[in-house]
Every structure is written in C-alpha cells, then in structure tokens.
Length: 508
Image 1 (cartoon, helix red, strand yellow):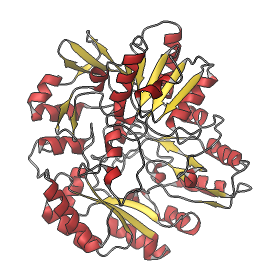
Image 2: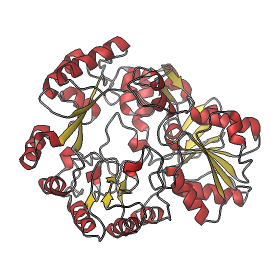
Image 3: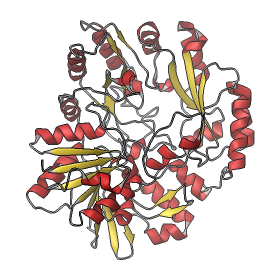
Image 4: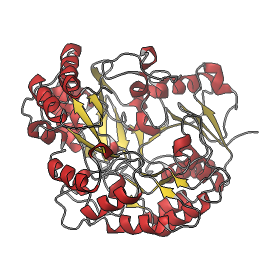
C-alpha cells in the first residue's frame, strides 16, 4: 500500500482516544487519507518499511519529551536505575533523530513536526541536559512545518493543502521558517539577543503565548508562529466520537475504559508546560457526548462494569470553560463557574447508565477548586484508592514562584477528613524548584511528616518553555527580574531531596 501520510512516533501506537496519534489517524482516515504508523523506530532502517508517503511524514517523540523520558532529574539514565521498571527504546532528541533519518532516505519528502518535544522547542529554549540555549527545532531538524499543541485542525489543513499543491504558510497553530516578517506579528527578542542576555531571555519568556502571532529572528530568517486556532466543545465531541477500537498495550490495561472529559488547564503553574501545549483555557466536552461514549463502552467485549477514569490534567476543571482574559482564572476571575455543578451532574448521570458498576477517578484534583459538594460525591462514589492532590510545597515564597499559592491546604484536608479516613488522601510535592534552598526543603520535610500517603517527592526538572525553567537558567524571577536562589548542583538537589524524604519516609 502507498500511504498518503506516515506518522513516525517515539511511543507505542494504540487505537484509543488516549493516544494522540490515533486521534489524528482516525480523523485523517475519515477525510479519505491512507495513514500508516511506524512506532518506536530504533534503527534507521525501521523508517523504510512503509516506503515514502504521497504527502508527508509526521514526526513526534510522542506525548512525553524523549529527554524527560530517558533521564531522571539528576540526568541519570532511567534504564540504569534498578528501582525503575523502564524498558523504553526512544533515542535522545527523538524528533531530530527521526527527521535526520527521513531527510537522508527520502530527501524531497515533506516533514511535519508535532508532539510535546517539538511544541516546547519551537523558539530558542534552554536545554537542561546540555546546560545551554538551543535554537528552534525547526532550524535544527530542517522540517517544513511544526504543529504545536493539539493538532487535529492543523493536520487536516496541512494534508488538504499538500494534496492541492498549495503552500503551508498562514495555518493557525503552526510554525514555519520565513525570510519575511509579516506586519501582524509580535517580534520576540532574537536568538542572538537572548543567547547573549539573560534579561532578554526573561523578556522573551514573558511574551510567549499560544494566542498571538509571534516571530523570532535568527540570522536572516524568522520563526513564525501563527496563533492557535479556536477549539470548541463541538470539535472535541466530534474527535472523541471517532470509532476507536479501544485496544491498549500491555501495562495500560487500567486505562482502557478511561474517558477524556475536557482539554486545557487554567492552573498556570510555572513549572508546567500545559499552557503552551493543551492551552490555558478549558474546553469541556458536552455532557451528552461523554455519556454517549460511556454507553458505547458498556458494549465493548472486555468491559466488566468499571470506568477507569475521567481523564484530564485536573479532573475538577470540567465545566470551567471561559474566554481567555488577563486574570488568574483559578481564583481571581469573576466570570468563572467554580461550583463544580456541571461535573457533579455528569457524575450522577454517568452512574445511572445501564451496565456501569463504578466510575473511578484516578486523575488529580485541584484542591483549591474542589467544593464540599464535589468532595462528598467523590468520597461516596468515585475513589479508586486515594484522592490525589498536588500542593507541591508549603513555603509561601516557593509557592508564589510556582504560581501555586492559591487555596487553603489545611482547610481542604480538614474538609476531606470529615468525609473519609486520613489514608484516603495522597499528596505530590516538589523540591529544588527555583527559590527553594535547603532551609525551605527542611520546612517542607517537617510539614509533610504529618501526612500519610506522600506518594511522590520529585526534584524539579527544567523543561523547555516554562516560566520555572527560565528562573532556573537566569537565576531571576522573569516578571520582576529579582535574583532568586537556584539549586544548580547535583549535591544540593540531593540534599534537598534527603531533607524532605528523611522526614516523610517516602521517595519517588
């Protein structure tokens, strides 16, 4: 078979809504395109097996950055850690490796980059693993176009344009290389400027947004970012109604009957890349679409009665759809509905579907957005084992630098403990984030020694494009440009981790 499009991805492919490549494949096939997938190639010859596509190669490391996948926060290879069950075979900087293989063997083929790794490297970025700035991955890969964030609308338009032999400029949600700078683009500091000035790097960080046409110059060329297209409830209802087989690979059986409820996150945590991938506004699926999907699941031959999860970055942001504005949506926006009423209604109706015995919630909950009514609903009907929350830290200064200084953790814990036993709440914390010294780590350790189920205490990992990574690289708060303490040495990072887990008795 000669394919129109061939995806090369650095992870296992499975025909399920949780697999981004599967969503794109199903969508393109509905449009009449023939789509092949090469999963987890480890050698150059692996990318030859489906031949050359008529239209383009789509290249991605998958949902996880290959460097994050392969290395611990202390830059040790995960495959060498005897405590980890790690069997990945993804090359470092997989997007560049795959692109080079395609360029070598199919010289005139169009290459479209996508996924997390490409998305977060679309402009000049700090690379933690080399401890230096790198230029845009579009320059390094010599690809034709980059799709950032969610790609359903972009990938169909790219396919249609190539089929009609049209150019790839001016497609929303994409980046291209151009000699010209259009008038309606906001220009970031150039690669040369940010490479020579940490203050300029901070300026660039403060300007990053999916909602603007942005440009960055390197030499005589520009990276042009066309603003993200508007995704709607209707769009998501359409995508998740595609006829997936819901097959899952070994190790993911506990997620076979998970249901995606919404997209995006309004938390705006400084260490998180979601605002530059899925976006910083909530797009919820309609109640009918979700309930219809559950009804289809009940007819699956493997279904035994349990819905594995309502999946999203933060479970209880469902229904908090709002237009983008300049306030902190989580707590400050007067227009945002924080009542959880839409979510509670959805849960109750889902439980009534014939064939459903239990709906588990495994996804994390934003404790500052969880009402007492929702907590009661979760405790009485939906806990899988524990309710997972991520306070991340307890020190006010560190929490402010994380942009996690909203809500009252003690009040939430008291509310929860009125409804369930203490061992039904689990916590995720972070140490060595910019602003944290050994003093703050000891404070965290002392405080969380009071908690049970401190599931994870992780060391901060700088990943491209986040505000916290800018702090790590520059040693400044990008918004104020005031100096902050940064744990750069492995020794200090280990000491901070020991200060926390030595008291809590828990490790990641």
